[in-house]
Image 1 (cartoon, rainbow, N blue to C red):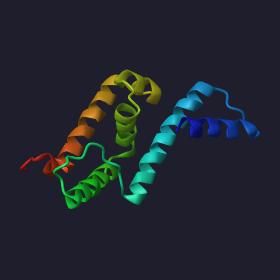
Image 2: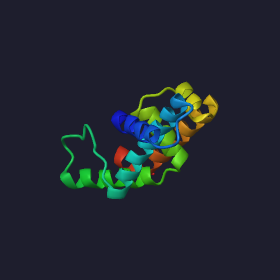
Image 3: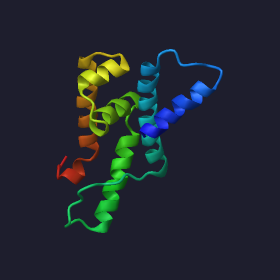
Length: 130
């Protein structure tokens, strides 16, 4: 993904327009590249699952993948952005807040609500009876 971001910056600098604030541009490009990954996964409706229980049948695994894809595609763009930065990119709430120009409290709220939403959507696979 880093290669993609730097290629975007290089292409942009080859154009007539120059990038005035490279650091800000790179942050935004990283976010956009992450969102591109989410969008591409939504488009083909598959997500790779790691550590699937060995006792699970192939049908259960397929159902879980489909449910996870549906749950992720139901997220609002800001939720998906924060979720990716937090859990896939490993940024702290403080780093996410600074990157997106929002408060740390708002980041924490978005993370909490997104996790609740995903838990609700995937509750059946977690053994919840609701």
